[in-house]
Image (tube, rainbow, N blue to C red):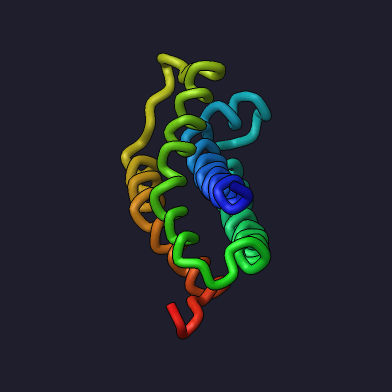
Length: 138
């Protein structure tokens, strides 16, 4: 049971990291209007936050995986389990913070979101392979 909780915790953290990155990308116009900054400054700030967040999240995920999932094949279930958490986070966010009708999502944002979602499982595999290599007897 402890492993199940740890696996779901790591999966939820994976989903939350991607959720934060995507929501920052989607809400550039909202951030710009709230802060009064130009869009270009907000783009740069969001890009810096996403890169720093990716580096920090990678360090945290590697440490958690090393600590909780050492040599377990079941740690690869996080490749699938992050998806329901991600959908849950997106659904809850759109319920509590609805998207304004006057704001449009630019095609380059959609491409970034799509690319991030497609490449995220590769990122999770990298974390699992690096942090918790399988033992030779498995």
